[in-house]
Amino acid sequence: MNTTRWATIKAVRSYLPTKVVTNTDLASEVGWTADEIFAKTGIAERHVAGPNECVSDMAVLAAEKLFRDCGVDRAEVQFLILCTQTPDHLLPATACLVHQRLGLKNQCAAFDINQGCSGYVYSLGLASALIRSCMAECGLVITGDNYTKFINPKDRSVRTLFGDAATATLVRATATPGLDHFVLGTDGTGAKNLIIPAGGTRLPRGEQTAQLVTDGSGNMRCQNDLFMDGPQIFTFTLKRVPELLSGVLTQSGLQAGDIDWFVLHQANRYMLEHLRQKLRIPPERLVWFLEKTGNTVSSTIPLALEHGAAEGRFLPGQRLFLAGFGVGYSWGAALLRWPEPGN
Amino acid sequence: MTIQEFIQAFEEALELPAGETKPDTLLSDIARYDSMGRLSVIAMADIKLGVLLDADGLERCRTIADLHTLVQKPA
Image 1 (cartoon, rainbow over the protein chains, first blue to last red):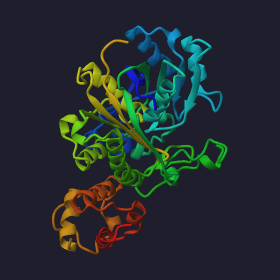
Image 2: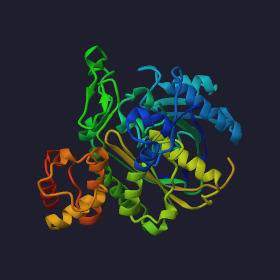
Image 3: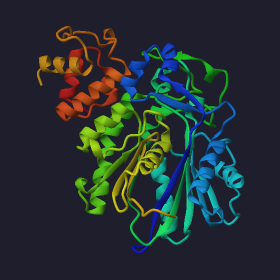
Image 4: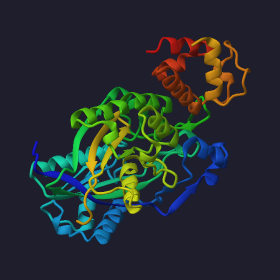
């Protein structure tokens, strides 16, 4: 690997749909009080995409904000990696639609990757590889999902957790350490535990897949809807996230105490707080950004970075441990040296 | 961990009134033993016993005693 050239994050911006669903809005539908929902999840409200609002629409708004706020010259953009599991169409790639609407040059690679909660780290890994191999100097990583379009209103196991969002991250080549020490992993045996079963070629949508079923906890869903087995996902997380941290520390030769900030996928408060205790992360070093957005899948880490940066929490040169984990199962982590200000 | 110690930890994890749970209590009779309740048991076993419970094994348990057996012999 090139040791005189790195990739780093220069700026992150986001778009959150205007419609907000509060716990009070959900209480009557899911059978928990607003306080109970907050106590269980740590989430007070989540943004929900409109009926005609697709990932490309959200992605363009996030990227335009990035260009506007950060003075990015779009002619510099040499690649666009768009991470989504809820694309506008089966084909073409949503990245191509976004590329056109952003007015990026034709000499710019654009492609989707289909990952969920690990997707931001995966996308940064690809961006880093493109830059460190000298295939590009500058690119965009966009995350966006609207899981809420696939959630049954009567399924409180997921209704209370997920929100919609898109984020855009500017990634550039740098001569000082930036993104490094990526650890990525996969275990497809967990595919059935977080899945939208119908709608692909394996099980096309039809009358049969629209049949509602009530589970043992009283949640209703059909095969067109998102299904999540919470206990299975929790067990997976407890097994793999400690391995992610130890993998990154081993690769980098660092100790946990050398990490300034831990930015983990914001699944829900219960899981995050348990991971914090298990990994012995000091409370003041764990970054939280969940209460106003819920679990936004691949967007939780960049949202946490955007807001931590806006609050001036991260200082140049500080080490951030980024870790995403979930649907697939898929997991990934990396270290990020927080960059100097400016593009 | 004895069955009594386990019951105490179980009641604390699910925020149940102390002393009401017996070894033969059916898990299906405990309203708080829902998806979130299962997470609480997995978390309790992880922190207190250093045991990573298998979620499939958890689903096979019918009683508190079954759960106690599972934490003694994790997958």
